[in-house]
Length: 500
Image (cartoon, rainbow, N blue to C red; front, top):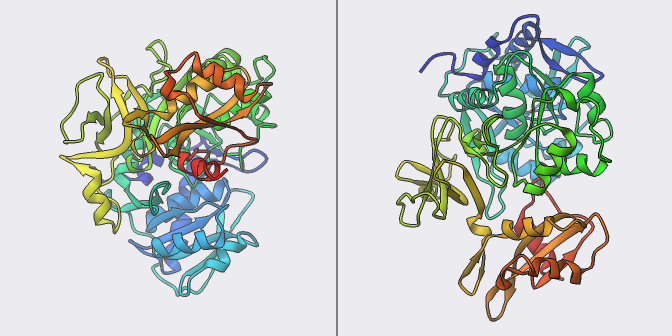
């Protein structure tokens, strides 16, 4: 294993005077400056007594200091970015579960996180200078080493958690070698180069934003533009100003951009080499509208935290990008597994399993999850899918989200996509609802963007779905609840609406 298979090694790829990070209305950091600031910040963390194996949590908006803290904390110990929208009890859980030794915040911000701070955990406040330098001031730590040591590829660099839709969130320790491989893998998939500019609209407490938008770009010597948050009002103006060549987002963000579009090609869209979509399913309808209005190929990808993000992706033109699929495996192996752990032939439905250099060795402190998540050297994703003979992967749904109507297994995504074909439907989520005779029946929630009644939508679905797949209950709602990263959790939607 090469000694530079670390996050730090990725920063060596950028030309010293090339812009690495640009903040709209804020500082720009060249690669030379970014490397220096990361090194200075890592040394400061070491001076505060933090060392290899210590978890350094931080609660920051998308910003220069978020990228710097991520890289510096991963150099010294283990970085643990947390969602700024968490409530006090959530902060308390994550700080306790990761065994955090320090918490980094902006001055005067994140009051719930401050209240959740456990005894003995250092509180560190971060300030950013106009030149992008990061100043850290701390309480509760003694002076430690004078400088940080170089991490090893096997050291844990990043600690994240699964979303916990069906159980308590599981702690995912990602090693430097996992992340290093993933960044290069993503960059290779899309042919990223020093001339590329990524517009990062995904939060940097999530693997999508950290790896696809940020580290893959930095590994290629390109520029990452980091607005504080996604804003559909300013998106195209900022993208044009910074000459962005691509962006990656969840379908929710794509849909918000489409809703504001009146049919014209937005300013700046002409520079886009491609648009990437990941983290939840993109309907063929949304893909079509994105391509026709923004004029760039849309590449749906498949990723998960346990694989350091990307596992599969549709390819760049002139290769085929196949709507309704997540493309072919990229860098790691993907197969379809039966319940008896045997691998299935193309065209057969089963569980998607993966193995490769970006995949975790195991969950932290969770022997039960590790026993059920690994089989014959493969990691079980929990996703139901099928592989075409030419390697294109279609996801049917989550195994635990499949609707079981009297023994008939129904994939909710199939129902979503039919409802989304109706011109009045902006969003659709199907889920199971308890039924005395069948065990479960099909239900769905929709958000309208035009005029339609429940009767209209059910008639539309009845023309396109087998009778047993047609929703027996249909809820027209103002919005569908999502996680902070834009994911829809069907079980949460079901729990909220099944009580009505």
